[in-house]
Image: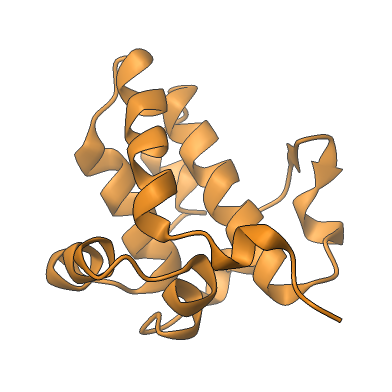
Length: 117
């Protein structure tokens, strides 16, 4: 069975939407980069490389240095679906990232977004 079409979407195609969402709410690209780095383990150079190389979301997560061990503490609803109940591991990681971006845009404290780390 083929994966969801979002898996083949370049990370570079959704990243500007994450930034725009945060900036519309008075937050910065640095905050978005920080939560993405926290989740995936990418440093600034690695994140830039994924954008420049237009890697797919599937490759983005497959190549991620290290998914944060506290990622499982991310709970909440995105698009009406509870992230902790998403069965596909890749889709769950994508939803984790979406939820972190939403939390930044809503102005949640960074210590809370990063699950106390």
